[in-house]
Image (tube, rainbow, N blue to C red; front, top):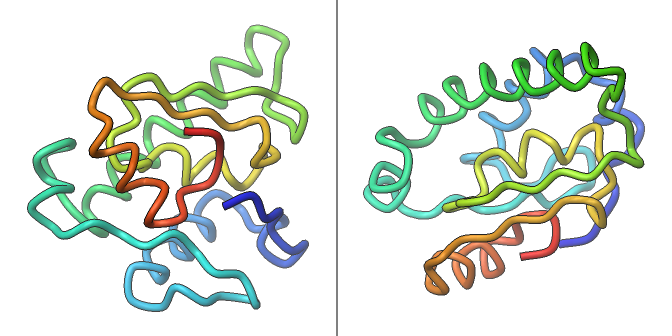
Length: 128
């Protein structure tokens, strides 16, 4: 997936973005944009200990923390920022940074080629 989000989604607050990501679990087409699919609940839980809305609610805390740390270091998150998710699993954090960082600047890597293939099949944004 390499599509940039439309302005209606890019301009959402982080709280609204969380709700949009939660909505995308069951409704993958939002504002004319196809969101990445989700692996089955068992696979999600294998990687992060939870699944679907709970996994996303937990990830939003990391997303906020990383944005705060970047800003405090004088490098606020912008579309030109780069984000590497080392050990990306099923792409949970890449989904959060999709709003705020250009998809071409998102990178996810993992030691498990199967999960990287899963990310690609699901349409997770960024380079995998």
